[in-house]
Length: 486
Image (cartoon, rainbow, N blue to C red; front, side, top):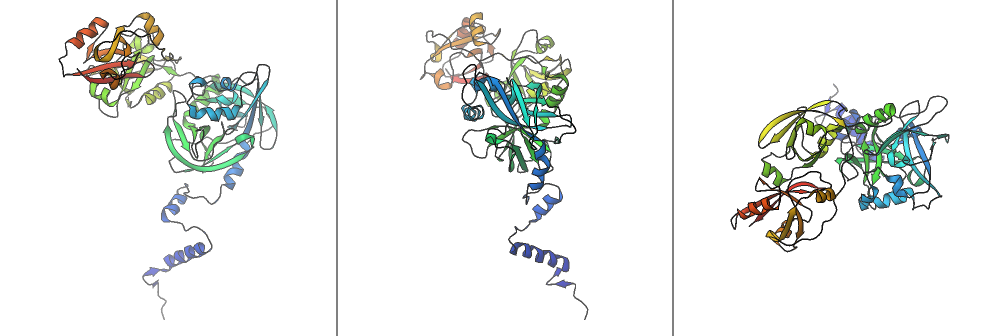
């Protein structure tokens, strides 16, 4: 009898696959779905059976970093992780206090620990700036228990990255840097480090999100992961299933479960290269204060959603000022590439070389203009404002006065035009609308005001019941529009 090639309409090949899946299922294995098979064939496993080989291969290149410094407190060691540690978000306070211990009295030795990973055979090691900043001695311990004294090649507080170096006889194990842009949410990752001093601990999880902003500095763009990252993991690698570094573990939310943050390796590559060659990072500097456009500001200026960043301040003598860019210009593109947020604008400029010329397209009074700007070297931005003295009450429950050079100096806003709000009654129209003491009113219904007389004249010309749009500069926050009805 001729052998039948199909049984119940199924080919022998399909029957064989079904039988195999049933056998594996009976043996206690998870059945593979079609997406899982496809993911495995593409090199991205949805549910890896083991991380053993990945850990064995990469652990030798992950190091324990122990530092020592004379006296001082933990805040001094943390300077650079997002600027002034006294302004840190409370959610990170617990993490850093556990990481570095309590404050030390002068004359005492303060010791701390962290992680890092070797990136080449010459002994260059990437870690966090806050791990080594201010250290008098840095000791690096490898997995094979060899110990080396390390020297700092360079630090970059703005990204919380540092490069240190050790000298060893022979070649050192190292990890290859990957591509964080290719990393996807939901992808498996491995974190290796020294949490709480427990050497070479391996944890696994997934990428939970990308592009996180956590208030640590001007270049926030973190990878969020649920792979356990604890005090002592700082500076260690976040590794993908191909065994390549996609992030540098940096921070956690104190008291949070499964919430850790890593610096994307693509952002770190240029920093590492510059630290290796120059010992510091030189970033392009435009010389402006910027902010995102709120819904009200977009409506006020007639800007479409998803485009444009408002220039709130132009620093005299800096590149933007020399090129002719002015406050209230809205940046649309940099070298033809659309600008959709203040952070993207900051990163785009920072990625440019000092002295490089860029074409900046802005919207000014409804018309598009293009300026060629020669970038300078980045410098620090001015600090936040101080409180003002109380004055008398006026229209809308707010009181304004001329913006004198002394007041402008207190507010760290340079040579701005407008009037300053010196008092607000809480239950007044202005108070309920959100006006605050220290706000600078620059325009009333698109009409500029340079002093108290201008302001009173513009307000006086508005009839009862008519809308009043105030363009306000809030020092330390940026521009905004507050709507009132007279």
